[in-house]
Length: 302
Image (cartoon, rainbow, N blue to C red; front, side, top):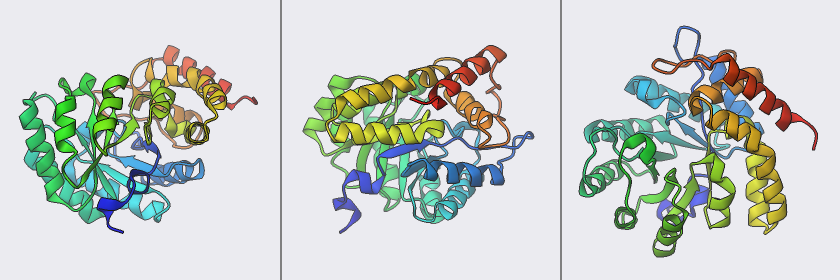
């Protein structure tokens, strides 16, 4: 069966994590940290590793670092999870080059953010995405996150892009459930929730899976949530989502997701340092205390 015919959960996985990029105190990428983090994510039920996305601090990674990161994670995962490489920038030529480098590094799929800062027209968004999708043989997950990019991928744009044979999925961080359901009804695009606060509603409305920041430390709970929804056990799904509320609040609603995901991983001893690259800063003591309290709540027996 060709990739064009495979279902999305085989192309990308269903329980995806927007993986943090472990760093040493000097800001260089930590290879030992990557080993421990990948092992942890695979052991807790993650079947898709999104490498070099926003939570991976993509704006501060060089092209060489991004490609090396993909190569390393591919080698560490040993085909136990799909590796999805973040390749989006505001420069189409650079995004095309990063896509080719990710393919050469062994990525299974690409994550392509709507081009930010430049604020292109919707026709420009289509041209950008098609150019990247044409550059490799890898399936593409579009990433619609207007809070970061300054523009949105309109429904008509998503419907048009769905006609490309390699554009297969959307990571939706827009939060418009009605639009998501409408696009799913009119296309074969698989939807992945990119807003941890809305994981349950998206799954209940037909999303294939999650691309979770909180999953860095709660991929096992996310796996349980997906299974509960798929089995029609909404009572259990609601209980799982409720149990994650303190942690989701601490990671996603204090300072910034990448900062807090790394802090959580360091608090649990999964990575040795919570270093982030400027302009990001390590969490305030009050944010860290909120996170510590939330981790204790999630770890407590049911």
